[in-house]
Image (cartoon, rainbow, N blue to C red; front, side, top):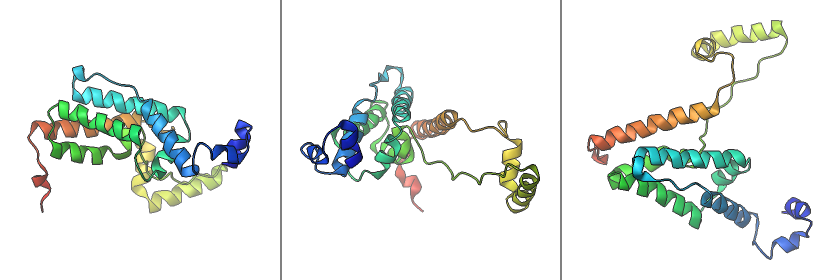
Length: 193
């Protein structure tokens, strides 16, 4: 709060006239962000509308480096956050999905509904020195052969992953699966042991 007050050229106490504490400020920031997500038309179908809305959220989160961490640390949904969730669910309901499937779809979409996801943990950085690098790779190959195989033979081997492409890939898998379950008349009874 002190750094924010300094950046705004006011005293920290001046901030407390507007928000009770840091958490309330972050709640309001997340709510502001959620209110900026682009409205979409469901005329093209629920799957396309849901995808467009989620990709709109992704574009916003990408514009605001603070957003992902702020969203992940909120303990209560604000008005605009609830409206975003309600809109996502309404898109699916309007597409004919059952309440049962919408419930599970929202869990599956999880942080993706905000335009981000928790990726796998990054692998260790290899040493710059060629000899040490080769030794490290040999050790990795012995200990983690599947990781090295994927890293060395995937189509983008040696290149940085395209996080937007990876996000869209996973989102499309989820949406395709949700669509398939909807079309098959799926219910949560299928989850019973």
